[in-house]
Image (cartoon, rainbow, N blue to C red; front, side):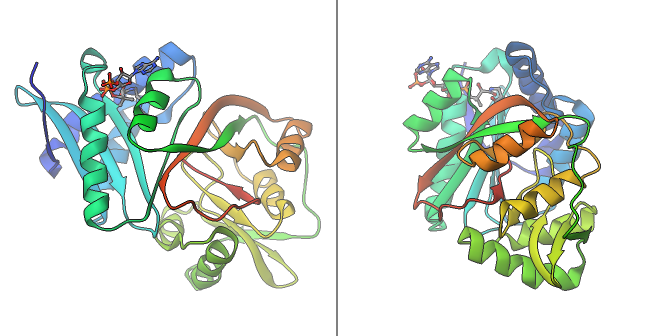
Length: 283
Ligand SMILES: CC(C)(COP(=O)(O)OP(=O)(O)OC[C@H]1O[C@@H](n2cnc3c(N)ncnc32)[C@H](O)[C@@H]1OP(=O)(O)O)[C@@H](O)C(=O)NCCC(=O)NCCS
């Protein structure tokens, strides 16, 4: 089977969504987890959002004129992020995934992006082998937490929706605590209605773009994160990600009624981002 890799266009959207739903449905069955983009409607919405952003690079793998694989490379922030990426189950393990990642990395190199990250399931041999071969190193083990609601109510902090006037402070927080800006994701979370901030003594000390698999959060301290987690409406499936190296936060989640539903690894290629403690990454 010959596979061609090319830049995707909007007419590929339905083909990408179909491959995405099929690849992640098969992964769900194999690993007994829940992945939102295994659902075709969620996959369609995800793909459509990727085509509205000019700074997202999109590639597809094609065989006999049919889309059999796709990869997205998000270059909206100082650090690039690959994902999601998927190959139709019948085409997996035939080299398409590797070529898609290679195409995304060639583009990142041309744009001189110093660091690329990605998140992938920790129990998946193929993914770990593939990304290691392509130059990615493991940065952190992450636990996805879910459950009804943390049994805790913050008393000292105020949590409220993020407003456009908060963007500068949140960007400053992401730079000071994290080492780089997450401005595009912060702004997008306001338009999606998922952005929230934590205030302590009239200062923004933490924010989230969503306490779920696709949102990230930054705090000056773990107490800022626990306030955001405890007041979230729900965590979705497979849940929000906590770096397992943050033992204080891991124990807080476990002690407040939340359960681990999935393990993932955060991988990085290039310059290492600043080590951060009070941070919830996303995939
Ligand atoms: C992950 C995915 C995109 C990879 O695409 P793919 O086309 O199947 O992967 P490739 O065939 O290009 O590459 C797999 C590599 O891993 C290697 N590999 C697989 N299992 C391995 C193992 N147990 N140990 C060592 N290497 C292994 C293969 O040999 C191959 O390397 P090679 O070409 O040097 O031989 C695809 O499998 C997929 O869609 N999976 C389901 C969705 C998913 O997990 N997406 C990624 C989320 S981050």
